[in-house]
Length: 433
Ligand code: DLL
Image (tube, rainbow, N blue to C red):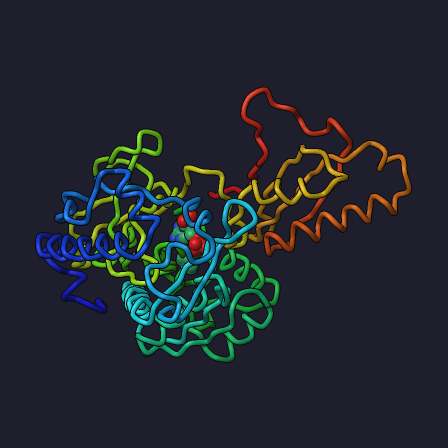
């Protein structure tokens, strides 16, 4: 099943010509419409005419999450707000989220790449897709939703959580496709066991799993427990959302929809290009986006690119499954979290000391976050009620910043080990098997 055979199986020379043309248009668009890019290009001594095609891609400056933050909320948009028909947002490194915008044409391209992704996974109009990614500012729910409508599948927009209801609707509506994070898929599998639901009696045949790293072994476990084929979908809000790349039935790398997003891999330290076949940090340039075109965005995700033609017939470059990042971002229940966000909350609370530690675990396939915070010794000699009140206050502040539940434990001064070098603030005990 190939949604757009003409493009997805295009001869690579022809594809490169198309990419070159679109890259030049994008460079021109950002130079004249986004002061940030104009300034950056001028610093590099570049004018739009200097970029003549794909061979010049590496001359362009990089963009980072910090750049989006510095231009919060809409400073990198390349069109007037009257042309922006939707915004989404995800966590930034500290307080403020990263905001992204879409024109009507951007939304149409997004549905197109998600439709391709779904066809890659064998999903078509006969299917009933239960979308258990969160709807709202997160791109997962609405992103997959419109692509699924485009292929003509029956959409069940249940959003994330509410496990009992997920299981009920899955049975009553005979869902054939489950779209959610891989850890939630395992959690659902466990809940089925608990409720005596036999997965082989369900109609599920395929899962579209992404938004967080997952390993080959996790795939095998999901496939075995849910009796489905588990397909990897990749994406990030800064580039568009889900649907930047997707696995086909051969499950041998994710096809990057290169007529919209140009992938590169670089060495995170030297920032030099890494040859195909070697691991590097993934970098994307969008070449059709209108509202938020982005040049050489450093994703921090580590992968290997391969542009050999796939057995499925698609010629688009494949990226290997991402299992690591080159920064300290954690993905907890699909939500992106930076330790620095928690640090800035604690700095605002006068009773705490600047020593904290984060423990991430996975219990019954559900991620948990425990935050240990040092507080003044006086709290431990005082009434217990005071300690409880402070715990409640810190928990509330952190939860409202991160948008996920956390467990806070107050500890006495000097409990948390001091380090002589770079402080190790995160212990991730999740076994990404
Ligand atoms: O997670 C978009 C998405 C939604 C993708 C639903 C797939 C399904 P952000 O919240 O901006 O966007 O987070 C992007 O999540 O840089 C990766 O680190 C991680 N990520 C996303 N998909 C995968 C995946 C959405 N399939 C960040 N494998 C990215 C590994 C993934 N990591």
